[in-house]
Structures are given as structure tokens and as C-alpha cells.
Image 1 (cartoon, rainbow, N blue to C red):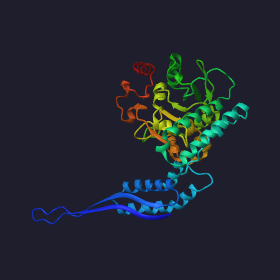
Image 2: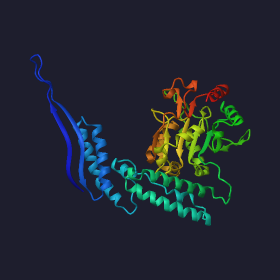
Image 3: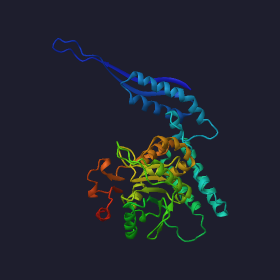
Image 4: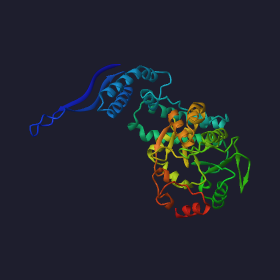
Length: 403
């Protein structure tokens, strides 16, 4: 790497004297204008400058912290440049993670992952899928999102369609049903949740509007037409006496493992965990995930999860793309240390996704609840995907009818 120049502006000024007083202290305005470098990789240079700029602009008034930005970036430069020159060229996202000193996410090749049946039909689908994904990788390695933005979205939708065909592994000639949402709930048998589940099942609302759904519990039960899926875990959990929140990470980590191992999620674009006291509109969620940023990142690289609150993910509704689920299962053990230190399941999931390098999309119309600055959530107004909490059957129904 050859560093040609640091471009910055330092403006020094003095306020004029007034009433015979001395001029006030000198003011400094420091503005980062970038660096000019030639590493032989123009996209690396672009990413380096972008990362450095974000760092120094965040601490523009602190010379010591600005210096630390330079120290950190130049310390990582050789490692990240060598990564770019490796046999398996990293994506733009992986290079950025390296420059920022964050864990470099392992990207799962979706065609390889979902086309494991080995049949002749699957082999043909897999060949077309891998060809399309390779083109996507070449575009992503160039880090030129502006030039190929529309193409990357379109080609990953092609990959998405082909992986669905592989996952279905069917010879049926009938039109395949929609494969948007796989939804699941956990029911605690001795609570109000059983009545809520039976109510939602009876009217066909909530998770029963998803393309596929499962109900998990700590035992085998027949609830209406539903047979629960047993998870070997104790659903009793302590309540933190200071925060009054359930310390339920262990419970939900066990359920997530069951969900991942069963593999139903592989056939659907999105996996949605919903609490039973949440009033949920699946169709609104389907509309939400059509946003360009979400479409671009959902089934590429490390996938994407939806953040539902400005204060961080809240548990009433949790949404992960299929690619994010692939990363989750392939690096399951990497989040064990997170689980050991975070007792609340929603905080755990957020920190786990961050640790795995999964993209985040802030979508604050995903959830309306009191704990997320929506004290009037009970009015069930607006176009939120979900409202929480409604623990009584009549209240749940009333909210749902308003929508």
C-alpha cells in the first residue's frame, strides 16, 4: 500500500474582542476529506477510506480518538488486504467487517446447502442455482453496489426461487403454494396461552395465516387440530427482581435448536417467532419485506433479521430470513458464549445475530408495544405488523377486529 496523502481541513478562528475583553479561546473545526492510496485493489481502497472516514468523523472533535482510528485501520490493513487476495475472495461485507475489527461472517452457499438430495432433478436445479449464485458473488466481490444493485436483487431472487425448488424436492406438476412465511409459537401449557392458541386456531388468524406454522411446547399435546412438537426443556424460568423480565434465554435457545434441526424453515423465505399474546398480521409482514434494502440482503451473504424497536429487538415477534437461519444453524456453537452472559432471549438473539455478522434492518412499524414507546398500542391503530400484549382472549379478538 502506498499512502499518497491525507486530506483534511483545519480551520482556526478567533472571536472578535468585545467591551475591551480579550478574544475568546481559539475554535477548531476539523473535517475529514479522505485519504488517497493505491493498494492495487481499487475497491479495497474505497472500503478503507469509507471505514476510516466513518471512524474519524464520529470523533471529529477529539484528536486523540482520531489518532486511534488511524492506528486501528492501518494495523488491520495488511490482514484485510491479504484476505482480499486469498483464494476465496471475500464479499464487500466481509471486507468491511475485517476493517472494522469485527468477526468476519462465514457465508453459506445456499445452493449447496439446500440442494442435498442428490436426485437428477435436484442436480439440474443445483447447477442452475450455483451458476446464478457465482455471478452474484462476482458482483458482490467488486463492492460496486450502485452499478449492480438491481442485478444483484434480481439474481438473488432467482437463486431464492431455485433453492425453494430444491428444498421442496418434489416431482409434482401442480403449482407450488406460496413460500413466504414459516411461523412458530411456544405454548406454556398451564397458562392463558392455551386459550389464546385455540382462539386463533378457531378463527384462522395470527400464525394460522402463515404459509406454514408449528406449535412447540415441553410436552406432546393435542390442541384442537394441532399436535404440539415437544422440546426437552423446562418452561419454568426465573423472573429478574430488578428488571421484572423473564430470564428465558435457555428455554428459547432450546426451542430455536429444535426449529433449526427440524429444517422446515428451509422451504420458506422467512422464519417468524411470535408470542401468543401478540396480535399479528402476516400479510403486513409480507408487504414489509418487499422493501428494496430487505430484498437485497435477505437471502444473500449472511442474510438479514428485522429489528422491531429503537431500544433493540423485543421478543413478541422475531423475524429472520432463510439465509440468516442458515448462518444461525451452521455457526450455532458460536453463540453459546453470548447465551451464557445474556439471560433475556430477545437480547440474546440480537447479540447472537450481531456476533454472526447478520445484516439488521430497523423496521419500527413491525411492533407496537408499551415498552417500545407506544403507550397507546392497545388502540391497535396504524399499520403495524404486530401489537403486544393482549393476554385475554376478548382483548386479543377486539384488537384483531380493528385491523
